[in-house]
Length: 250
Picture 1 (cartoon, rainbow, N blue to C red):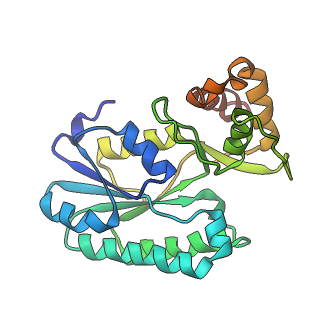
Picture 2: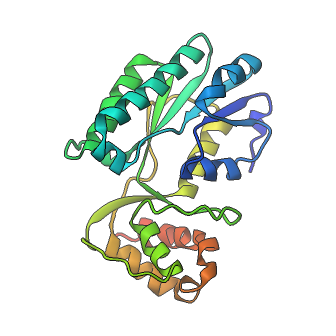
Picture 3: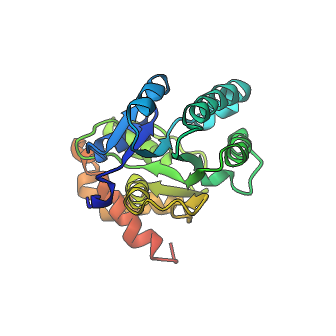
């Protein structure tokens, strides 16, 4: 990883022990990066004058927004306001994660939640950008943390645990984002230190869940049914890159 331009800078990743936070923490294992939670942010900002970028990785999932919208909103905006108050006198650019499924969509509480907080976020803090993601999937080779968070993970987890997976709508169209796409975007942001765009989309492309199933069973069958598949899940991301992103017929 070439990050020569960040030697004099520090980047803060703010979150808890969630799936994306844990994967990023393992991938960006470097002295130029600080990983912390909201409780320790003020001390870290005060103790480090060379921080230029902060990635806000907190956020409720689809079911939390659906089942308890008001509580999720209060908690999320509370964290954002805490961050604003801590960095308001600093020259720090904040990047916040969001979902591509909220763009031009007001159907679900999940979409309504992120549309609402995203608009407030961009207006309230001018030195800020939003990174829009699809359904993130993938784990690192050394990280066996595996979350039941979307269709791809549920599908693979069912075979790893030798359990049946009941699928309600196999042909539904979704947007998926391999975790390595996010890594590359973050790496580019840090290495260029360029904060020109306030809305960033990481690979917007709709595909069907059926295409995912076909690609896994066709391209990765031998390793798929083994217990070690959890450590080779990144192969699916290569399949995704080669066969889905570049092949319009799928």
